[in-house]
Length: 529
Image (tube, rainbow, N blue to C red; front, side, top):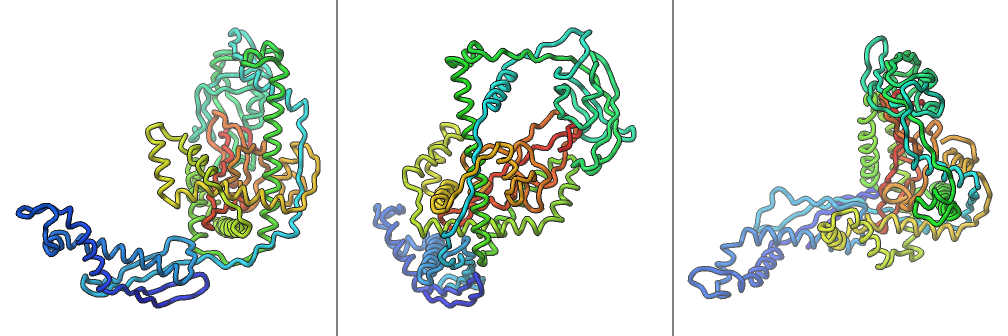
């Protein structure tokens, strides 16, 4: 094998590898000798078929296999000899003029990982915001469970709806007298006073009775997400199917026992522990975001364009998918296009942080143990049917890329935990609302504003912020909103698909892919956030 370097520019490398016909022929001859004992041919005893006849029968396929194997081994040897660290799978191209019996010339192109100076992890300073669980939070959560357990009972037909009652309604929304797409629905449950529909909608339903028909006049907010509805006057023809009252159980020992618990105290203890876990998740999210910000600010190096393009394509595909489900897909796509370079910048940041975290992990002997990996595989296998689980396990064990993708989130978490231990950490007590606001804030200073590694995000079960305020440029917010059964989805200003700090790291130095969650958009009649 002869190797000639044809390109060495930045992170790009290109080589021409020559594999001699002698090497290919020798591999064919070796394979002929290996399969000859198994070849059967009339007139010959088993295993006694002459090699020249074996070659005549199977020569073409043997030559192809020999060529492919020679190319694969040559590329691996090239990588080893040149001490290359490929960022992505190399591009390998056989010269079009190749003929069997002649030397094979192979063009190999690849991008290599950058050489990163020993990452600086000294001087990291982080603030840990901690929120205590209040009795009021526990009571609120218990009340929510009680409400969910309560049965909705229908009022008599003569009952006039009041705040707190739940209506079951059909409606048709119209603008300029014409019904608009997504503006109609049937059997929608609406709790009067919940604020889930746009201003003015619920207020006009006070006093309605079962079977009543009413036309409601409203105006969509100027900042409404769907551009074709923003600021428009509209009417909704509403038919009331029924008026319901939630029969909320009393919070006592009997209620707790109905849930299979010993009593109310045990229920409250369980709820307190659950809320503490949510707070811990929020605290970690805030610290991780600040950690990644510090690392990004103190490290700058070129990143492989192919990795950036792969990361950007993933972000873009997710955004396109989400935009296609908006009330006004064209407006959502137009907004995306206007901010395309912002999203590309997010992709660069993610890749750079992913490489950096990987380098820090390797330099400090952070590893995912075999036992941890086995647990990951078995946990992931649970999402498949029993008959497919074993095939999934075998697939992951045999495919290094699949294993690396599965390992990436845990590996990143371990690197982040390592950095937390190295950092100088100060504690500050805050309320949950302040903690959520800090996560949403641009500079973390608790001003209201508005995952990272691996599959998108922290891979542990983490709570989401209650509501996102206006979303930042090129930094979509992670939110959790209730999707209501009402017309026409809002088009959110930004998607959660591309938060800048979702920058995963894989052991192979590739970045973990984000599992962001999109804030579900409320429907047209729903209240604009």
